[in-house]
Amino acid sequence: MDGLGRRLRASLRLKRGQRGQSQNNPGEAVTDPERIQEHSPSNFAGGQHFFEYLLVVSLKKKNLGDDYEPTITYQFPKRENLLRGQQEEENRLLRAIPLFCFPDGNEWAPLTEYPRETFSFVLTNVDGSRKIGYCRRLLPAGPGPQLPKVYCIISCIGCFGLFSKILDEVEKRHQISMAVIYPFMQGLREAAFPAPGKTVTLKSFIPDSGTEFISLTRPLDSHLEHVDFSVLLHCLHLEQIIQIFASAVLERKIIFLAEGLSTLSQCIHAAAALLYPFSWAHTYIPVVPESLLATVCCPTPFMVGVQMRFLQEVMDSPMEEVLLVNLCEGTFLLSVGDEKDILPPKLQDDILDSLGQGINELKTSEQINEHVSGPFVQFFVKTVGHYASYIKREASGQGHFQERSFCKAVTSKTKRRFVKKFVKTQLFSLFIQEAEKSRNPPAGYFQKKILEYEEQKKQKKSRDCEVKAVVSRSV
Image 1: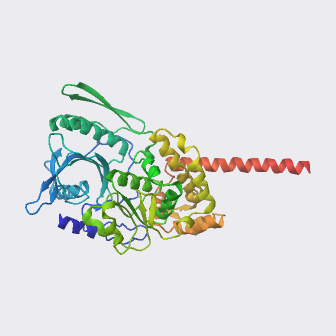
Image 2: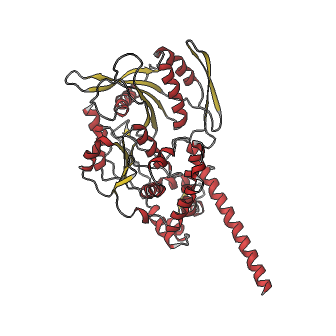
Image 3: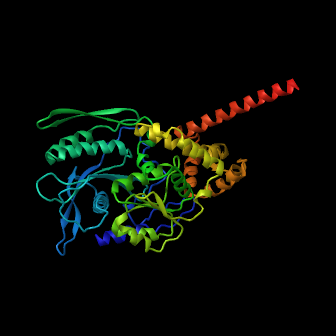
């Protein structure tokens, strides 16, 4: 475990790359832990397998001392006939996973009560592909004190709400027997992942209950299917969420503190999702394992979650220009000091006004997600939504972004000052790289909002012209 910790710590010593350069460590085939690449985890049309593995990670006592070591005690499916390179890659993956299933260290004791926790982590391969671990930690069924175990589903697909429902079904069967889990997961593995808005129905037999039909529906608006903003709203004020967004936009260091794994996982995913259509491209660890706490000393940008029990270790670490967010108390323990001044004042007020309108009337998680995400998407529409007009294309179709002209096109001085900083970030650079490769802007939610905004501006201009004409005639 110590060796793995050293390897993972080494993979976090990232240097901020220039545009077009990979930040992956070529020496590691798997597990640059938790680094989100330029592709959103929800960009899946449908048809893929739901998952790669179901794993059970249990605590086993070490040979020496009273500490426990997380160990994989069940794996479905068992992969056979792999090529040597594939086998090595799988072994590295499987060695890393237990560390993230029990990130809170090795000091455990059997328990009679333990609140179940649902959380997730991301492991990134050198080729940029990612595997997401969806975890449910709970006490096994049975009499007497027990050690918690983790059911972990490894998938390439980002859809946290849907996988939480799958973990509910796994937990229900776990209370009966491991043997009941196998046919359910086998049926799930054989089913194709549904397209946005579609449903897949699984047939499953449970002893004493008979045959059940389980429907799994994917949200129609796929850009929000990997997030739930309700926990972030519960923990923080709207003004604080905007300041976290502002810090993330300039790719600063952000640490979230909370007691529970679920709170950390959901809040950090929500904070990263505010950046849509851009994606955090730096160190990203929803729950930092104890052996990787040195991450908070990184000189490069990061967004990480740390359990409150490690607060003193974090405060004692040498850190510079970090935003330290206490989710338990809803406070900032450390900040740079300029978080309120990063965004253009008018646009910042627009975000706050939009978030505050009718927020107490929202009922479902889908309504909350759309309400929270919308103002931040609109912020990017108003500041950089004109990007496609400033990509000059060669005959081959390859585009070249005209950065200087793009910035000059922003008429407001406060907006232009912000845009000049934002275009230098990896967030924007990676987005523009993809846009330069494509002849047409991607037909997604962001492009839809850009077109709506352009149409609104045209209509306003037309109305203004009509008013001027009426005034001039009356004069």
